Picture 1 (tube, rainbow, N blue to C red):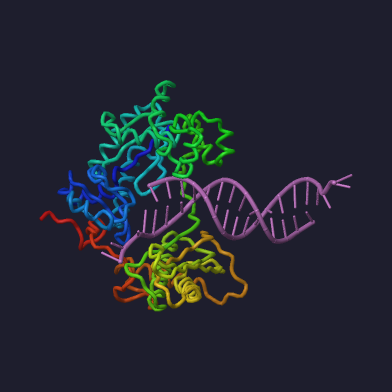
Picture 2: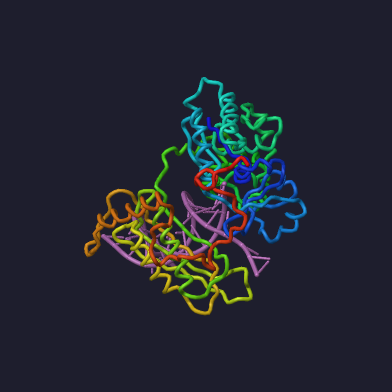
Length: 420
DNA sequence: TCTGGGGTCCTAGGACCC
DNA sequence: TCTGGGGTCCTAGGACCC
């Protein structure tokens, strides 16, 4: 048996924990750069603010409905997420952290106990200790736990916890109530194709022959269909694997065209990517860099490109990654374009011993000591205290717009919440 | 004027091997 | 008229997720 715990309107709920005056009011949270709406309180959903809607297109409705607007504050959300998981683990220790606001739980080791009561206690405690409301779905497969969670959220009588029923007739009734596009793993494209085949609900998909799903779509879709029938195809992944890629990229607050400005943006992404890599105790064997213009500005000339190189030996040393990223960036840069976005991607990520390069001159142990020292100083004195000169020292034109950010209440001494 | 960022997995096809 | 059989690796593109 699996449970899925999903935080309700997570980012909006985080904002409310520290500003209770927002309770009962519509709240939205914007993406990086204050570009799009990425989270909405129930009240904001009710007045028709869509997920992913560009901010500038809903300004009028925001004013009319007195919607509270926040820039995204990932420092706060990540810390709140950690607190929610820790609280859950007090009750149910076998967890898979699926996303910033979702956790799968393995209930099998607790069999014999009153699982529903346990889930209700967990839910109430998370609310009490962190302030975050969550919903819980319980079912024999992950796909059904997702579906059950959705029902827990939408059905007032469930009080936030829903157990997928055991009886066949009852199961069919529930599956029939879920539209195919609301099934986990079925996106827009596949929904359209399934509709064309007359498959409109979760029940319809569960009744399709597995071989037909396999042939018409792929093995992932087949697993989804089987899981809807109660056949588990995905296990709990409680041992986090090493990531495969690490990307740092941003749209610019304003477009830039000069190489010095573009290079600063690339430099800051390379620096942050290398830091993140070291934080995960890993190294990368491949680096790529991309830049592109604003695709929405059809009146302007468009250009985009990417380039890459091997990192041999695999490394997490900032100066190495930075200088190679800038070399690639310089090759990509063309004058006469207005750039909107740049990014750096690290891949072939490994941990542990690395294959040395035959002709490499660098002293890697010295590099590691230097980076370790730099990271420790930055941890103690504040991020960016020590940094390469290639990054900028002043707020720049390309810096991210973030006009509505709340304080980092839980991670900065000078931003602690105050009672008055 | 303003349009996010970060991930995973699968498949098909081409290049190459013996 | 008929033109082998069995593999691996890489990449691009397409799907999905939050």
